[in-house]
Length: 149
Image 1: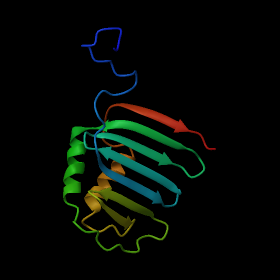
Image 2: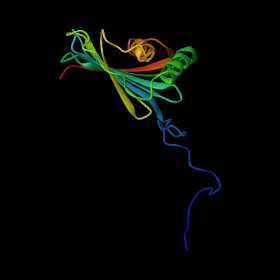
Image 3: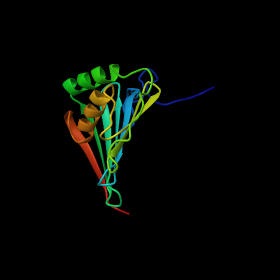
């Protein structure tokens, strides 16, 4: 025989700081690395618009920002992603000191070099670049900076 305390018909409240809803699936993951500043910027966008931007500055530290994308930017991103080809297009040489872009969407990883981004990838790369640089933030932004180690 089991004995318990409290009202069994009332569900337990979620622990403080934990969301009661399940986490949305990842829509797209984007990386921009290299270039003259030797940076690595990563953007992960979930299907519900929640986004994490992670900016690393070589040996100079890094910054995380968690936010929700505004509806217009989310719509622009979905439209750009919807135009991506079913197969990865050929990658050109691009700029010697330019950035490399990696975009993962629907199980396909697209790669491009700055100065040689295939036309089919340009809208998605441009939108994700803008998000990495601060565009589209709606509501509060949770910001964490990590000092260099």
